[in-house]
Amino acid sequence: MTEQPEAQDTAAAHYDVSRYPRPSVTVDLVIFTIGEGQLRALLVQRGQWPFAGMWALPGGFVHLDEAIHAAARRELGEETGLAGGDIYLEQLYTFGEPDRDPRTRVITVAYFALLPADVSRRLQPGSDAAAVRWFSVYDLPELAFDHQRIIAVALSRLRSKLDWTPIAFRLLPEQFTMTQLRNLYSIILDRALDKQNFSKRMLHSRTPVIEAVPNAHLTGAHRPAQLYRFVQEGRYEWGATGGDGP
Picture 1: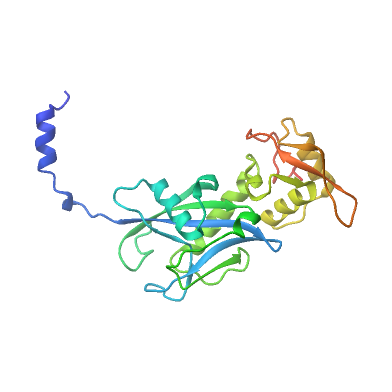
Picture 2: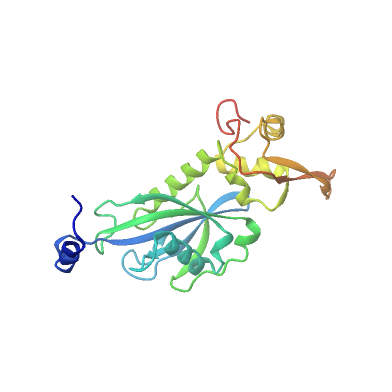
């Protein structure tokens, strides 16, 4: 039987919110970009306790009247100086070990964002940290909290999504060469990829995700290179990172 509105109002009026512990909630951001031939993550140097002087992921506490995703977008804008609406942002995982933060019980919802190189160069970091720097994900300093683990999970997610989504294109300019695309995959996967096999898979899969831009080439010291563009958000029909991939 459904409880009557009057009974519900009475129960709400007498509900004691202090009966249960209320942990704090934060968002942490793994912001990836490509730079100097490396996959890099943005880190901030903490200016206060806890872990003063150590490097950490950018992030912050969620406001009481704020949705989790809105908090992540807000922190992304505050930490980068960039409008977050056109930046790829995906919820990663919730980390809630009881002792992960020495201040109090803090549960964090981690996100990862992808910034193309030209966008990352326009970065205007916030001023609430002692310093802000890009670090190679393969050469990280000792990090505060459990942020080393969060980055490892984000890297694993990014690699796995190469198999079945066009997520890598979020790190490229609108038009790119096949060499640029192959180099991007190689950087993310941290291994060399066969040139011919990679091109074949990209261009001749059952549902192609790139197409040649008509009459568009990148000119330089060598023979002009054909430019390509991303064509759809569909699922890949082949495994880019599997045993039969490039």
